[in-house]
Image: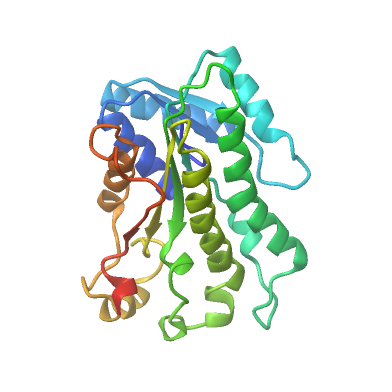
Length: 252
């Protein structure tokens, strides 16, 4: 199951897992969009893709993860792997001085960390649970602080609460790897670098000058690491790990 399955990263993950032969459940806030994506990828890969609506990106819906699990139970969809990828960019707004609101801090932390924890534990507590692997989607900004010279407008272009919450997600990964080791469930994270197509060419050039590989990531770089970490055959001995996929950005 891949949360946030209709965003840029989510689409790459859903398609990549389906191409690798997995039956996939994707979640989204938008039913029509989710169903269209599921049908399109199912047709192109020949693997079953299910679309499920989930609205767990707000403090106003604290029981949304439990409702999602109940929905999965009713459809007899038992995920063996959970990819926590849900995002809401509206949480990342800042004021003219680059300061997030208290609500922005709460909502971003809730979606990045609390929802990832709640959904994992709701699936673990399911008596019929088949969950064996969790992959949390993080960012290089959960590993290193931003190089503000990358941005024309660093106040607006690099919101502080994004990286802080991704760092918390990486630590949640380690905590859960320990606490769920006896089940046994492996829990890992992936910290992606910047992805091409989200910014103009001027930004991409500056980024490349600051990165050992000299480029931003592209869509082909996204799914492989997640499929690897999800695999019981290829990654059975890996848990509590944060796999950095950033073209070398964080080693400089």
